[in-house]
Amino acid sequence: MSTASYTVPPFLRDLLAARSPSGYETEAQAVYDAYVQPAADAYAKDALGNRLATLNANGDPILMLAGHLDELGLIITYINDKGFLYFDTIGGHDRSVISGRRVRIQTAQGIITGVTGKRAIHLMDEADRKKVPERHELWIDIGVASKAEALDRVQIGDVATYDHDLELINGTIATARAFDNKVGAYAVGETLIRLAADKSTPLAAKVVSVGTVQEEVGVRGATTASYAVAPHIAVAIDVGHATDHPDCDNRKFGEFKLGGGPILCRGSNINPKVFAKLLAAAQAEKIPYQIEADPRPTGTDARAVQIARGGVATGLVSIPLRYMHTPSEVVDLNDVEHTVRLLVAFARSLEKADYAHW
Image (cartoon, rainbow, N blue to C red; front, top):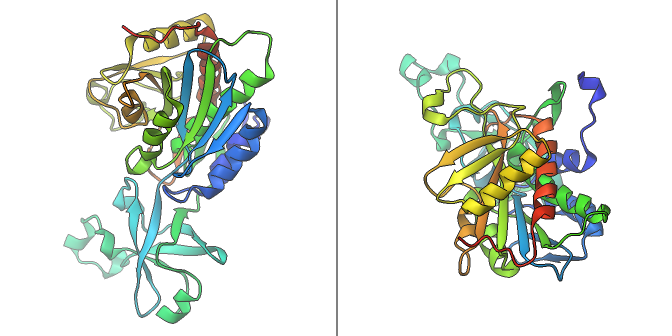
């Protein structure tokens, strides 16, 4: 498929354009509101900023689908006398790729552009050239000459994201700043939209698609949403590491590839009956899939959901992604579509009073 012939779904494109560092998810919330709320039977916002869209409110069991709206970012913590902005990181950054980036800072006066800076390589000695700069050795340059001038434009606590937008690079292979985890939020929202639009197959379950917040700083939105929804069954949708690139030992990290389909997780974080139902749905719909084994609580919303209230039968579906937590993550958008199809089939497969207890 040529790049020119593939059209990115508008909902996904708009989510990827939205700037939403953890705790500052306003732009992504607005996109989710615009696309998902009209399809929902009920729609709620909570104190943390989660978005909870409900379909078939009297259904049984209660199924929660969770995909987080937040992304990595930078938060302004100090401005020096020359007007250079110093920052802390929101989420897990690789400091070696922060410098030399254009960033977009969200301020009370609107979006302004800055550049992440550090001392040029020409001004370093040999030892310095081999070091990854510490956070306090990096700054943001907004082109001003004084602290007062900077404070006319930005404030302490303003946040920034990398200025790296969506681009198709070959067919359905795409790069963007925040596939982690706009693809997951898209998948749960789009699943509800499709279930609502197709009444041909009866739906036993009550489905609640949640755009969660603050996953990157401790799965916080999923924690509170799980209490509010009180699901019997839940599936978290996030990204997973594609290991089909150089310098990635499959003996250490498993074998996962772009275009190989959604990754179904097995392990202590995963209810075995939910895994089996996801696997059966993928096979019935002839959806390609990959299987991951994880012996411990995963670094996803599934970690919080599983142990909410008296416990939730939880699954995890991951979309393969290269270069996680960098400014230019890479996915195959076919894997995103296959994930939506899988979730639709899984939701329809649930039967009344089946709570996946084992």
